[in-house]
Image (cartoon, rainbow, N blue to C red; front, side, top):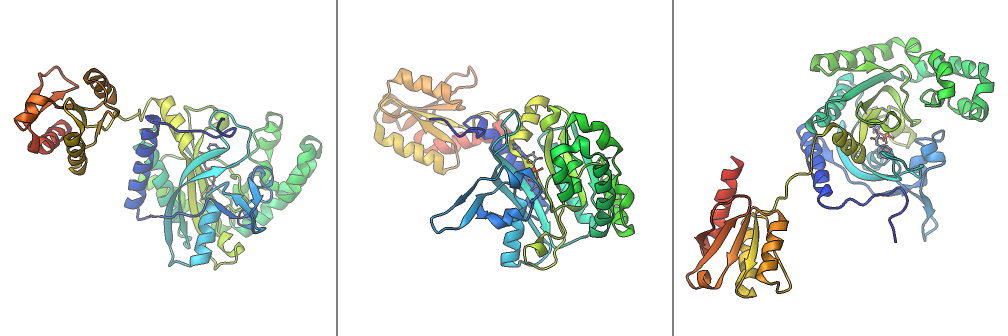
Length: 417
Ligand code: HAM
């Protein structure tokens, strides 16, 4: 038996990096006053249908099924629609600032950096259209990538304008696609449904056509242009370098106004986006809720880790084990001793199954523990245990049995300071 195609297992010790990444994100999100939101992995199909009738992610790549009650459900392909659905359902006070950690499912052709299940860390702010919040959201993602140690990162920003800006632009763009109908072929249908969808294509035979296409920036209304200008000012004030990418339109139908993407120069260009997001000022209303202009981003954990590998940062953290108990006497006190160590806050382990002393010492070495705590017959009689520092050549010493936890904790603190 194997895991489904394009879906990964994450095993220890690699999984320790996941804890590291998630903790860094959680800590930053909490500092920015975002609360954790957990939503179901499945939603009613309609929740996602609205986010991308003209996107492949919804049209061709969703994992959908009918449950035993005859409901049409889908595995989450992305994180924004569930957040907005939860907002519309619960109506929390705005601005509603939330972060999330969740697996997403897209039946894409798997390749390096592109999987059928991927995990995203993300944040969304619902119910506010202040451009300063756009800056905050970008700052959150940018700072997080810096926390991981990533440096070869580019921030691309663009504005998709408001509804008026886009209505004017769509007409011009559609006329342009119609003039290139022969080259577009079957994709002409998609161009008619959503002219913007063609812009971010990576097809090499379209390169010239795409480069010459009219640009959205020229069709922004004054209000949209002012919003975008304010976002840029904010980024400059924070010293966050960015590039304006006029053809960045992002892959979902819900985007309006500010859109952005972080790309890693250390990854292959085909899958180099380590995070992306933007405004979706109409989505809450489209889902039957109140008007609630909103913005957010998602960042793929697998991609972040590939970028970290490529930059040689964020290695697997060393084992966290403090002590490995080696029992040369018999089990009763060892069980209690191990429990005491763990309850006092130390990470501790032992071997099971009545292993020989030699095998226990091998296991202690392999465990990566800092100390072996040895319960030997002579020491036990005197109320002592032996301690061996496994990471140095220091000779082993004896510590009073009832003081061992405190002794190890002190040693651990000293090692950290
Ligand atoms: P997205 O650009 O589709 O946006 O995905 C966000 C990030 O998830 C990407 O930048 C990438 O790092 C990662 N990712 C996407 N697809 C895959 C895949 N097949 N395999 C591995 N990693 C992947 C969204 O999902 C939006 N919900 C982002 C957003 C939030 N916009 C507003 N708020």
